[in-house]
Amino acid sequence: MDHRIVSLPAFTVVGLEYVARSPNGVGPLWERFLPREHEVQPLAESGVAYGVCTPMPDGMLRYVAGLPVAEDAAVPEGMVKFTVPAQKYGVFMHRGVVSGIAETFQTIHTRLLPKLGLRVRAGVEFERYDERFIAPDDPSSETDLYIPVE
Image (cartoon, rainbow, N blue to C red; front, side, top):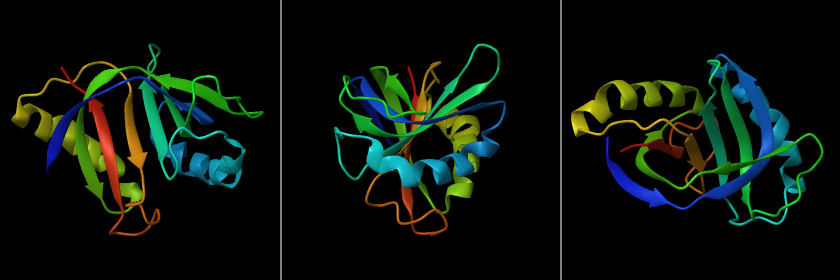
């Protein structure tokens, strides 16, 4: 799997949040968010969405399905604002249906990162959806997966 290393500045997303021990509710979260995405304004980048995942100290996961906004953007009712910190990332491309993203993350963590000599750094991981993402069930969809590395 091809990869690249990038250093990104901090950026902010606004969207809906899901907190749980497993990522099983992420699909329904996107189903609730997409009909409301027009409420998120103004966008810092059009045609892009993010799935941001943060491990919490108690073992829970915080996942935000959102859109990139300016730091001072308003937060629609029931949504949250989350700032992804500046970080160095390993970027890997997932090709296929969204239900396979968790498996791709697993493969990256258990096989690819060690093989490449990259160490995971504690922090925020995210999925970046752009024009290459066609639909959740389209096997030709492409999604970039960002993993913090040292």
